Structures are given as structure tokens and as C-alpha cells.
Length: 303
Image (cartoon, rainbow, N blue to C red; front, side, top):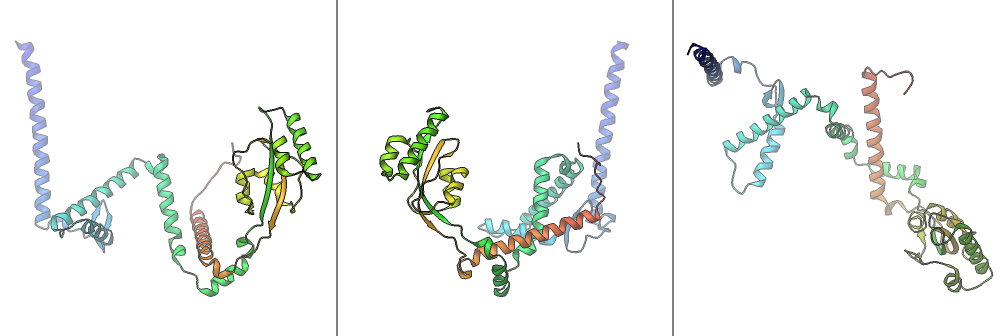
């Protein structure tokens, strides 16, 4: 019996200790609540100006609270009451607690998604003012004059092609020989359709007959064949050009020279580009200032 009485006494003692701790916690909560209700020391620390709450010294701003209340009100068919407003404030306090805890846990350093969101938010804050400034007509005209080449439309080119596929349809030497024969027959005046039927292979996407910008032509031909098409005059037959698909035999159909559209036609793109460049400049200045004020050290030789 004595052997069993000692563990029982220990369990009873532990239970009593836990009860005392719980009672102490309740007493502490009651004291804090009384202090708040009666304007005791807890209220002696005033809130920051323009704040509706403070969480570990960090203010929950009145404007943020008002935006959240307005958002809730817009979703309700009936007016919101004081309990709704208290609910909004509680959510903002809890959000601040979570943010602070996330920083304590080092998520801003260790979590790539959190870091990405943080970087994006700071960048947006740095460039927001410059992006909202609307250039006047004089600034727009000056920007247009300085950047005419940037807004110039490229040449538009129309070509036809005979595609001779290489591996695995045929080996490279056979494909090249067929393509050279096709180019020779075209230069000799044979009808395009006949040469294509005799020597060409089916194409997934047939080129439109209308002139296309080079960027669009590249989607059909790829970069290598498009480069060859750039210099083709109407009626010219280019030497066969090799790509991953095989050999392209290109025939020039038409060419429309590029031009610079009038200012009135591109006012919106001009404004958008001005805002983009202003944002880039603002971000660059912001980053340079941050770097000047920071202690940045790097290794002498990169690994």
C-alpha cells in the first residue's frame, strides 16, 4: 500500500499546482479587464495619432479601419452596427498579430512567396506616384519627338514558301537537293504551285498572302527564315534556308515599308510608355538610395 500511496500523492500535488496556476491566470485576466474598464494603467499609454488600436506598439490606422468598414458595409444589405465594427477591428488586430509573428519567424527571409509579395508591394509603393502622373500635351509631344524610332512600325512583308522537310522524312542531303532544285525551277519561271506540288511537303500553317509585320511572320517561319525574308523584293527567290523543320524556299510577294504613326493615333501607347519609364526611373532612384544607406558587403570573388 505505501508503494501506491506515493504516486497518488504526487499526482494530487501536480493537479493542485495546475489549479493554482489556472487560478492565477484568471486573477490576472480579471485585473487587466478591471484596469481597462476603469481607465487604469493600461489606458495611460495613449494610442498613436490617427490610430484606432495599437498592437505591440504598431498602429492600426484609422484610414485602414474605415476602408475595411466601408468594404463590409458595401457587402451588406442592412446597415452595420457596433458589433460589426468591433468585428472589423478585431480582424485587423489579428492580422497585425499574424504579420508580426510572421516577421518573428523570419518568413520575410526564408519564404520565397512571402519575399516575392513583399518585394512587389515595395516596388509598387516606390513607383505608384510616378505612374499616376498624367503627362500634358507638351510633354507628350516632346516624348514622341525623342522616341519616334521606338514607336515606328516595322516593314510588312508577304512571302510564299516551299517547305522541304529533312529528318526524319528524308536525310539532310536529300532535303537540301530537293530545296535547291525547287529554287532553280522557280527562278526559271515555273509556276509556284507546280513546283510546290512536285518537291514540297505539307505545311502545318500556310502563310497568309497579305503583308505581315516581321514579328508576326516569325511566328510562321521562325527566326532564321524570317531573317532571310526581310531582304526579299517582290519576285525574288531566296536560297534555301535551313531550320529545325527542314529547308525553306522563299519567294517575295510584296513589301510595305515601315512608318511612324502620327502622334494622335498613338496617344494612349505614348502615355503608357511614359508612365512605364517614369516608374522605372523612380524605382532605380529608390533602389540607389536604399543601397547608399545600407551596409552591403560581398565576397571579393564570386564562387
